[in-house]
Image 1 (cartoon, rainbow, N blue to C red):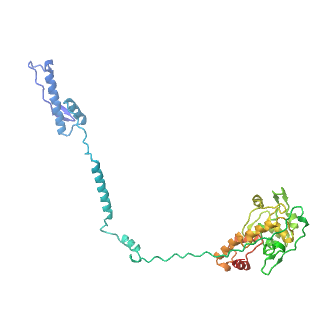
Image 2: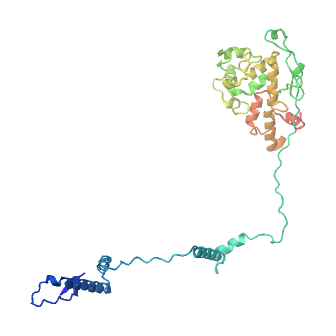
Image 3: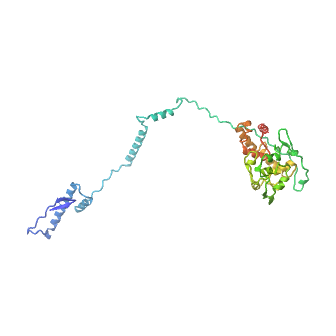
Length: 360
């Protein structure tokens, strides 16, 4: 007899016939038949294994039939903790050694790079490098602080009793000289007329507006008519005094500078008697009015344009950084600061620059 396994005929030993010639299996011979069948299956499996055609399922089946345990997968030998650590250390040493070994060949590009980075001095030259020389900052003499002498105690009830003071005169150096306690203290060098005609506040200082302090509108017509000076024609007045749309091009230095009336009001700088601000007070002070707000306004001017004024000192620094006295004529140097000072009735001329450098 033959059996077919994966298309290959395998001979299977025939069962010996019974004595009576009947090919049916006698029940009494059942055990012998079973033993022979198992032997035949084992012979077949061995042959399949020799031919490389055996399967895991067949092997497992045979193992179960013959009482054998299926073969387990082989495991790698387990290393001890000491052996694992030793191998790790060896790998680390090999990596360090590999990095330290220089290549036997080098490209021309790498060789050129090494020449570029080669030190320009010998290794044994311990001479320190020369110090870094930085440009020195311009030295501006410290301004002389000014102390106000005690003045009269004004009140809202008696300030009208004071007679108007005379208008100031102009000194040889160009500064205005006010009489009394303001002499040599409050020293602007621009009159109100010069300040507004030259271009200040974008040309809109006396424009129609609303006063949040007085809770009423401010009339451009009324305030301009009260000025102690007039401009050449109505068109110039509209451009430099009552412009509803202030423009930096109308200013002396062609730049915008300063804040709006509403911002001055929020900052608490507005006195109700001069609801338009400092320049309105200055016009009236120059004309001779004296009032309770004079000292506050003069102190404000000193902090801006006095010998220690922050705007004046900032402009001096810019001029010194740009070449000193020769940069005064360059109107692009500190243009915004110049315009701010102009709106406080002060211009930094060459004479003023020289005085500042002398500490005045």
